[in-house]
Image 1: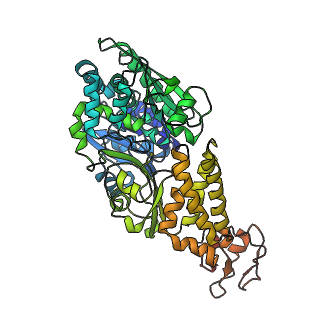
Image 2: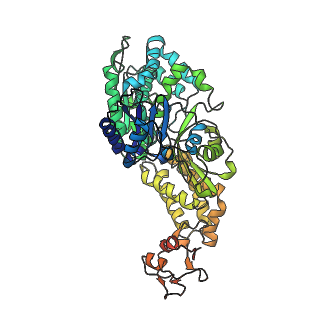
Length: 587
């Protein structure tokens, strides 16, 4: 059988590969060849928390496109491949029980995919696929038809703000750098954790955006700053960069205009602080990643003292679209002050986990219950952590608030790099705040006292509270610490580190007070505040809890209600999980 209209696309991003995508692809190639089917077996890129198709919880995702009709399969495993080839590819009969369900459509329906649009539709290792989707046309337009000031003007008109942190105006940053004195300037693209799906799914958009940015500010060199352990991202960016260089899009005399622009990789350390732009520059220069005192700002004196623009991969990925479609087009998406879309990782206790791209200003309710499909197990939503580890926790009373820079700033949170974690009734907010402060304390570079000491002390006090040793004065101490850190820390990590505590305390004060006054964890999470006991009237004396207990704390004769010795109990919860009759009480 020969059918040139058959196309098979297998998800091969971090998430898809982790779910077995490499083997699925190998078997598709094998069975297609074995059956004599002339099919193009392509690769689809999808990220770890966040994927190009977005719906990471349903990986491996596979598209079978037959005579123009696309069928998407979810949760594909290697042992499913042969049947898909035989029944669908050859006989033309899709296997309905394996295809995506209604939630797949609802997950995508309210999204506005701009930068994520090509991800999953093109082969990330093929420059021809990117060019077929108007790739490098924006760069050609900018470099051959527009003056640098006109490019910057379009970016300013678009209203694009940096997608990696504080949300500073991208065009304004470029304008300042363009006007800064100096013949040597640099453009830097920071490719962080949340940007991996873009690097894995559409690497040429990052390269094109950086190319246009370099032209706009008058730079001759750009850096792709990335952690070396992001192996798939590095691999695909390397392939894309080599392809772009071969086609003349990177290097000397680009588009015959005399404009030279070279790019190279700079591999960063495993440090959260490298998300801060001055610490990132220190890393590129081969020094320990620690923030610099500002001013001067990087746009005036950055890498090696030269004017430098630093934006993340999502910001640069928007540039080809803005130049190609026009700044006015982009400015019509989002709100009056927060333009365009934003990519978020949607995770936690929400049904539909994955990577989403939403128009700025979308209410949290639509994100969680529309795109996310609601809370797992129909439990009650408690809060949403937005903006990464140093973001704030949004309570359910603010579900109808729009997600944009201004609203989040007013409630003590940030857009940040785009993390969004959903918590339900079973989560302890105090423990959540403790988790984030512990992380931030570990990641503090230690250069300035407010952050180095403040994160350590706040982490200690939150631990004290979750262990039932807290006092109300501890809360006042943390509030004072937060104020000092927010106003005197050297960089954004220290200034925003108190956010998880401040927002959780402001909106979940009763939960903190229960830990301190009643020595109880309402969610039953903080082990030091939990007691386990057997409800005699429900106990069937089956022995499941006794066998599950690692500490030998449960005793009981056959056909007699069992008993938990509180002195031996290590509060691991194994008995609670093992009991099928709900005879273990957790309080």
